[in-house]
Length: 495
Ligand SMILES: [Zn+2]
Image (cartoon, rainbow, N blue to C red; front, top):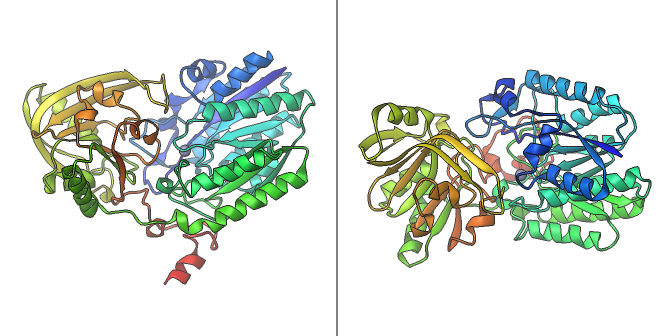
């Protein structure tokens, strides 16, 4: 048995003006069986496929993996040119294969491409044209935006159930087992699909608490009652696409009635929870004041999740920390390659420096902030992730700096959006985050897989940014009128 594997995975923030060009993606493309070498070092879907293949003595054939970008942080619309170039190469790869029994695709689901409204469905349609009627199964991120078009063209869809995403390998294994059994004729995948018309901000999608926990508990309920796999994509609100929002895919072994019943039930539950997905969060001035007050009362360390910053250069929280006289904090990263280059040219470790950082990539990021202090680190950084998110993954940063502003106030300057998923991204730079009162990270939920065990409190602050908690502040052009809360119907009802 031979199963082909490919991946084209991107979470596109269409509100970022910088487009995702082929130039940003080309260095991240991995070809042929090299994709398995890349995948084996950290948890991901493909490593899950590999585990099952080994257990079942099945040959996997690598085609191509694409989507890793060298953008500053999130990048905007994928250009048609980039999509066509990558798909052209992928399709040539599929054409060159023979004797393939099935295809496993590790996609993301929140890709947005100029001129192609539903890219994942298009990817599968193009592959289908080449390979014919063999089974094609897809694994997706929890932030996928999909609709019936994908459901119609694949044999089965499997989606993460955790945010932080710690089950990608497990979902890869569930998909691969389904594929192997299907090829052997021991399983007949039958899928039901629903679109509950609910769009939610990522910060409200953590799966260890309501409302998402209720949704996944319901998926597990159906899985105890004969469903092979019940999947929900919570959706990615920061792509202005027609298939935005939550979606439900239920796979059974040849039981259409059960699949439809479970999918409808889960979809109804998501609709009933829609207001739970649209809460308010504190803004920087009030949020930082609240954190400083709690630290004074002995609650520490507190982690501020500056969740809305999708570019990495946002200064809103740093600015408030300085303005309100906070002490003993570390800001995990302000992306500013120009400031780094200036430091590299004009300063050395131990120097007293004054430099303006951040607030350059987009007006919403805030104004540049001037910081003064001792340059404690300047150079490359190499470390290996140890937490549940990406354990074993090697991180290399070409250039990173630490400025100690005194009174325990450390600011890290990075080339790109920087949000250490565990303490190694601090320890490598000589900072012990456990000794800090306040840790600022530009992340939403993933970091909690590690940091919840370190900090006394995780405190999201809704700074201005391209990924806000309040979705009604964004201007959407492509979303359906009746999708809550961003469709025109709901916006009108509100006013
Ligand atoms: Zn995700």
